[in-house]
Length: 107
Image 1 (cartoon, rainbow, N blue to C red):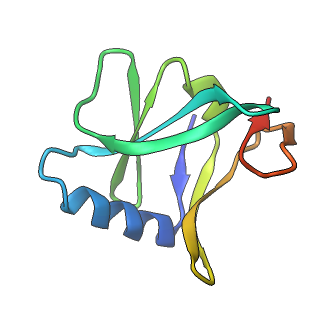
Image 2: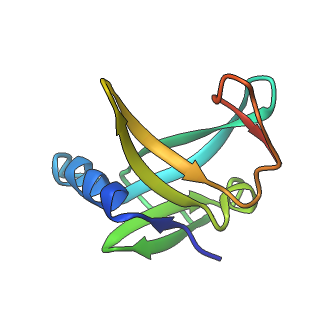
């Protein structure tokens, strides 16, 4: 089991974490949405719960709930910039299809 960050994603995550004194890491999860089934949810983790798994990648703690772990296990997170748009990008070996708009995926 693993969640990995690229250098760019780790740098971006560190800047978010350092700007929030209560943050212990980055929380990665999914929510049911869209036409394909799931969408990624990334936020700052203020705590680690009993049902969480914590991964460390490039010095950044990535916290994943037990419910989301089977869906995101093995994901690599990158941070990309294209023109005025920037954000995290996901390479998930469990994703079998993507929505045409790129907002959701199915497993």
